[in-house]
Image 1: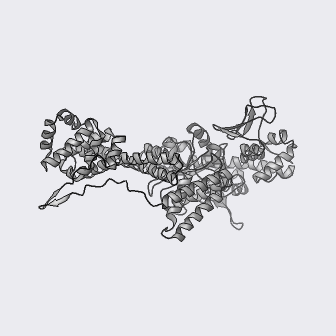
Image 2 (image 1 turned 90 degrees about the vertical axis):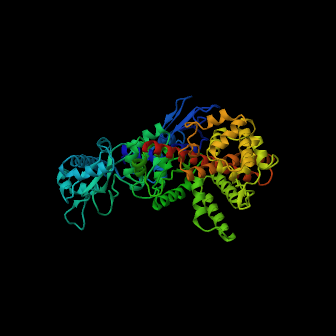
Image 3 (image 1 turned 45 degrees about the vertical axis):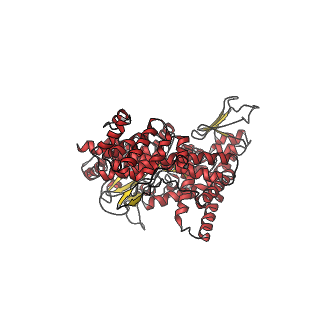
Length: 624
């Protein structure tokens, strides 16, 4: 039999070299490679490296070098043909037919590559012609620049049944049908498969055209039409744009998986060249293996609609049996109803970059999906959740990874359904009504837990200063928060002293306007400090600006005060929980984990407040 270069290339591509070598040699991760002690000579310090991307191993000690086949012959001692047969069986490849048939098949494959390239060239020419005007208009509406369309080899299939057939007649109908370019039914005259569509060539990892995707120009179904499976094209093993994304992913250190062609093209145009897409189906095991050769943790960025999120969780379930130490998936959740193309066109590439910087780990996606899947009010329903989580962990073939998932799910379950120890939301002062007029409650004393926490941890001066400025601009709000403000004086220093002076002024003088409060504070020696706080450019919050909307300013000030006072209390409780965890006290780890999340939630609230005020300030500048 004849083993063609194409067959051997496919065999190497389907064989994960580190997995093959790892069956008989202990390997450890070393950047994008694996290393171990060389099996071909005695050594104690590892100098044997395996590179999955390039498909070879190399020893820097004895210069042993080879691919998967060489490993089987040199390390296993198998004859060449037996090595190929064993690898082919593991990869699900059929061995080539007898010599004559194999040679004919290889020749036919070469001819099919020529056919597909000829079709791609013809489609590209049609896009630039008179008939391609409507397709060019579609690209323009989608924001695809001409140079981008050219780089991806985009084209146009005229709305006619026989124009491609006539243009490629030298190849013959039989080959055009085999390539998936013509449709022939019951021996009738064949006709063009793609008609009236924007054409997008699909290439193999070597950059050769093997199939096409066609997008309808106007109305019609299906919106996208792919080539059928052919001797060149296996939809379940192919990733769109893999040939271009592979080198880009090595440079970026990641690979992004999106749903469709246009998302890939839009991302590439925006500077994210490391994007690929499956071809109208859920991610397959073969596609996942190819992704893991590019990155240990591919980013799945499917559409923000229900269908896209269902596709993401299906991919998560399919990946579970294939997880390994350091090898997983992560998820980027888009705004509801948006795909990457929509997001980039509306908000720009920076919005996409921001989302890609904070992906969601696989374990989080599984946990949150199951948490929202069914009601959890009864013991039986909670037991169902526990069983589903256990099933996910059991699906993982790697024993170590499976153990970690079981432990993580158990910790999350126990923490989620544990009785909350306390509430961390800073309360409003209750106050009282006397003689028909509301009066504030007095400030809390220094022995109060919140005051003690503030005394130990202090308060954030970057937030405390704008809060003070807000209170001076809106002194009517002081009485509503007097209890909390009294605890803030425990911070000490000039800021703590000013909080004490503001609270004392409200208690002694009742209702004050801004000028009256400033006069009182000036008499107490705070004149210079107040002037600095009230500078127009001092802080960007709504409650520090003289011309801000009153209701918005009061709401933002309330949120800022709550964050300022609550954070030291959370920090203090977190210190206690951490100390308890170090003493291995029961339940301490869960308390610590919950408090870490609470601390993160406070930071997110502050970030949201800052962003909202920055957005409002920017809008105001633009309007002016």
